[in-house]
Length: 136
Image: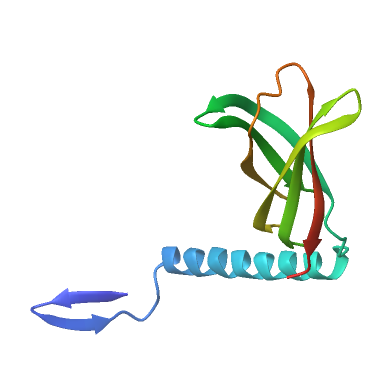
């Protein structure tokens, strides 16, 4: 520890106990973080992207209709250029479809977006699903 006496800095013989405690706690935290990252690297399986989608909102927009959704990637691998297709179905037949592409959907995360249709789906079924991706 540095003390000031008449504008001169001098070091004491023994460091203060707070310095020792701070150093010990810091070292333990660093060792724990390294161990945790190492454990995750060794034990985590590298699973391919697995998507699920959920419609989060609907509403009219100028010249059409917007269907908002979330896409979740439950796997441990990131997917790039993820193409999501939205379809308006009537009795199992596709009335209209539209696609949107996400640059990335990271591993174990969610992204959100919207598909724009030219017509109001009304009470008809809206199906949204991922139809393709590339490995980054």
